[in-house]
Image 1 (cartoon, rainbow, N blue to C red):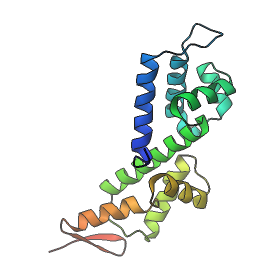
Image 2: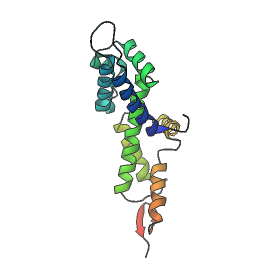
Image 3: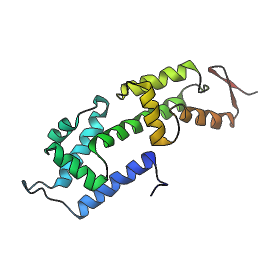
Image 4: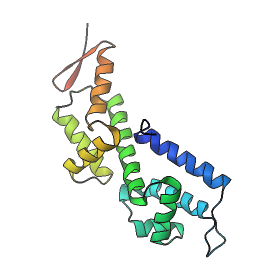
Length: 173
């Protein structure tokens, strides 16, 4: 469904994959280990090592599949590639950190240099080294730029008695 985007789509795909794999286990012809277990291992490995940006061969080796086997099971089960799944997971983590940082931090306008450098630091921590490419990929995934979650929460906070002045928060009297 084209109406479900971003992290919700990723979460639904993950849940659907687990349900399908538990209901209809797929067996690899070579071994007696169900491919479902290997897919779960691959997903777990990606989630644990996402910031390190593991390569497809590394992920495949970690779950006991060939590169082609890994790509095939991702395509058949999740309708994506391991590389795209990894990138989407990293983008989800960046978005979570941006939203979490903004909830606990000061309210700042989107063009504030502190916000920009915070976004860049979080993106780098998750392996996005090219700011322009990161912003484009983020926008493609979430339908908004990486600065918008902070701006959205800022607007929400203002409606509860705070306003923005420069890069600092000022409470309305």
